[in-house]
Length: 469
Ligand code: NAD
Ligand code: UGA
Image 1: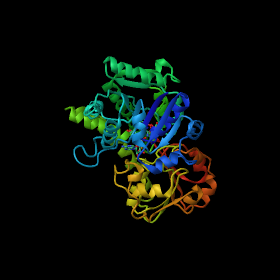
Image 2 (image 1 turned 135 degrees about the horizontal axis):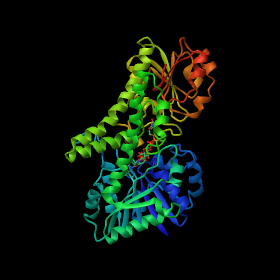
Image 3 (image 1 turned 120 degrees about the horizontal axis):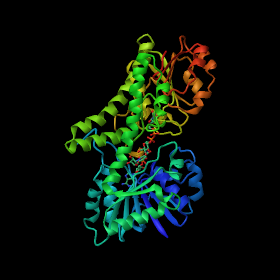
Image 4 (image 1 turned 30 degrees about the horizontal axis):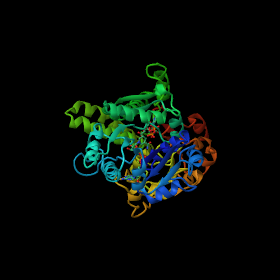
């Protein structure tokens, strides 16, 4: 029986390994993590992450050929293939702070593999890493290897949160990069054989190591660039009377462009787009390519601009002040169908409104008060560290209340900001909400999910992204 060990039981390690275990009953998969709490949650009824379909997959294989454990050393040493799926946050200090990837967690995982291995292993980079990381990892593994052969593969993950299980079941592609030596090619084949249990052969792409590492950064940069492109257009739409939804639709009909990733929004969030683009910018700078670095930096700048523009619009339309006014925030997660709040635009919007002394009342169906308070009191970039290392919020932000009820959040509010596109927000009783709000009652739809005409008929003043008033 082939044994797989995955280091890192997070948003990627957990779902990816659960799907490998489901699709490959003859492989034993053990997911290990240094976080005792996270592993305990994976072994409980309440999984540590919310992801549609995940619970069902885990229940089918847990205890059969899928295990979650804190015995990191034991399971690494027994494995034939070791996936490393630890977090790779943006550095907060030292060389490259604010841009470069912090490979501390990766390096400590690699040192652990080197220390405990007694047999040959394939080590798979699952985390998103700077191009050329495999070279550094090879140095760590091969130093003191005692004759053990390590083959490094790059196998970046392309799943999106909220649709992780369906993305893993039917990936657009599986990318495997390896050395061009016979040993490297043999390792690629071994990993290809794992995926071939359910992924069609023509969707499994083999490249050299550096192409695989860079393709992941390139894919995220280009996806984020599309959002910044349509968001930049949304500002021009608001200035001219064009409607960004109509523009996006017309543009998307060009088969060379296509319809996906053209939804204008309050800005993109999530743990990866910003981090990976900053990482790309840093790599370009280190390689003497300032023009290329500046090009990609602009994608982040437009995203920041979009969030600031949203806050300015709220404040300006409410007679230039939100001081002492209650503003309801519907949705705090960075997108629907996840409880993940890493780099969610809601953090910047809430901080912006708090800066103008608003009282905010937040409702999100999947995010706890503790998480929201932690997010709002944390410094930029401090969020992407294992949950157990994140500082507890020292004092709750007192102008912020968090509720489990959208109607309560909106009760007595001057305005509502919709910051996540949860389906349930479309089905709320807006007449009831309107009746219990201060007048004039404002709605700012940061996701363009609402029926604007219907809301205006009720009496709301509605602002959407990139749409005429
Ligand atoms: P995460 O923070 O949810 O999970 C990482 C886990 O690794 C944590 O539970 C942490 O405790 C554990 N860990 C850190 N160092 C460890 C060590 N030395 N030994 C054992 N465990 C250790 O992160 P994530 O969202 O799963 O992302 C992981 C990687 O995958 C990142 O590089 C990210 O860029 C990439 N990625 C993420 C997504 C996504 O949707 N979240 C998608 C594709 C790729
Ligand atoms: C993204 C990529 O889509 C994945 O392929 C990649 O594996 C992952 O990053 C990663 O490397 O972590 P994710 O961040 O989970 O996945 O979610 P997306 O669906 O890409 O959404 C990212 C952000 O962009 C969200 O805030 C979303 O609301 C926003 N978005 C997305 C828009 O504002 N408009 C769109 O048209 C699409």
